[in-house]
Length: 334
Image (tube, rainbow, N blue to C red; front, side, top):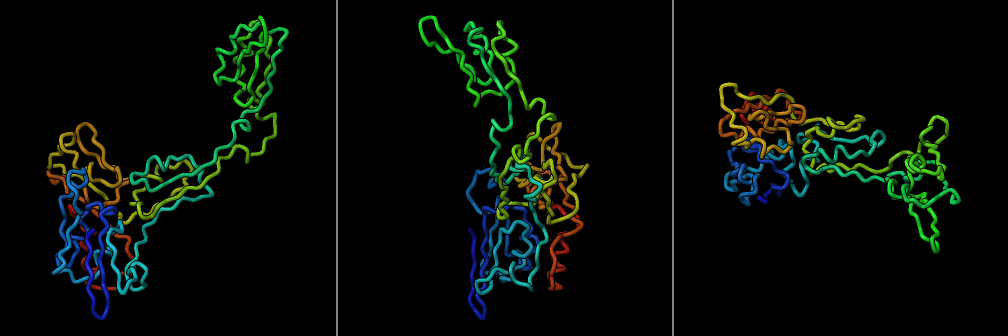
């Protein structure tokens, strides 16, 4: 973790978290004193070297805080007298966000599975099986010939034929396991099993809807979330809502030759799992791309252009900061 602190009329400190950093290079591209340099992003992302994604020149850094204010991943923390500038009214605020409506969520875990940063955890309590599958079953022991056909065919292992004496057997049904599929009834050669599935005729019975619900809690960790929108795209009930840090589009230069399968550098660094190789070429899923530019930074063929039309950063009161940040919303490879 890179860090820097200076004391004066104010105590100013800057800290970089490599765990949150994705190597996008936004901080280095907007630093007014050119004090931030990118490390070897691709080898770091591939786990080949143990280094920070960025290097901060402590001699030239003026501790203005622009890098921390503009980092869409909160990988840079800038404090004045111990207070984070993100909590100060006079500093810029991101309006990017990700949230999951707990009232609408059905706890299907689709978002947890899709999240590329493991930022979502779904804790759920499933309904009891016996409350979902309702029926009645019984065995006429006088008709039963203990052939064990029902035992062999039962998909829930709910039936056992137990020996009770010399040449005496009893067919026992474990109703906690029985799903009332009626396989045993249909297979019994002596019609010894009587069974009915009440839940198969749902409309004829009154059930409490709460009985069928899965209850739980969906937790989204903002420290890990990159606002990619995978949760929003995959949620079957529209419970997830995401506002991305940038608006625009990532595109490929038609004149450049993507190496795709033999390179996949862009795919390796993408924090959003927004890139896949299709027919030997890299393809960016615009729905989940956050336009961070990490892919463009590492592309050896310079195939990728990041075209940002808007940065969702408000309350920028400094004219010089506005001028610098405007560079992020022009067509660029970073």
